[in-house]
Image (cartoon, rainbow, N blue to C red; front, side, top):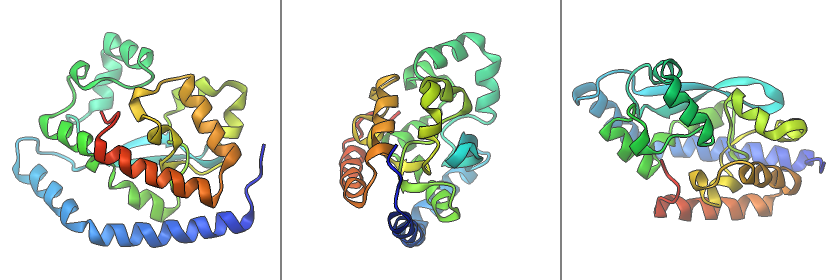
Amino acid sequence: MKKQSLLYLFFKRVFDVLLSSIALIVLSPIFLTVFLMYQFGQNRGPVIYRQQRVGLNGRLFNILKFRSMVVNADQKLHENKALYALYVKNNYKLEPEQDPRITSFGRWLRKTSIDELPQFVNILKGDMSLIGPRPIVQEELAEYGDRKSIFLSVKPGAMGLWQASGRSNIGYPERCELELSYVEQASFWSDAKILVRNIVTIFKSEGAY
């Protein structure tokens, strides 16, 4: 496994802090708008959704998103055995038409990827990087088999090669190979290319659900 240089990791962290700080300031009107929609709209309740994900070296952290589902969505998923089985079978995702937990406003948040914006807080805190393998739930680690230590050797990212290649349109085991290929080839240049490709994917709404 290729070992990432200290110089690369240092400047990657500097870039993460600078960009996430700027993004949180520039995007604050969007944060305020979503907050008001949840305070005065039909889907009142917590604005931020927290879900436990696996980070660097297996450390658990709470990923932040704008809530796109009903309150207690995770509990409802695990209580519904048929829905949970479908979730696992479909690569730990549910398509919008299959998932009764998603709100109408939440569908729009996901389609535009606005639901992901709170992750700039995760990046600023150091839980995540801007570029890296997508953080996964603990159940998904099984998909990486004896290579899970390689996957966990880098900080997870808000944007990565998997998202740039089609996001939710790409399932396991292909997703596993994409994420691990990033770990093996991570560099300033590959991060820059992935960033541009992700921006294009977001504007096209490819694989967003």
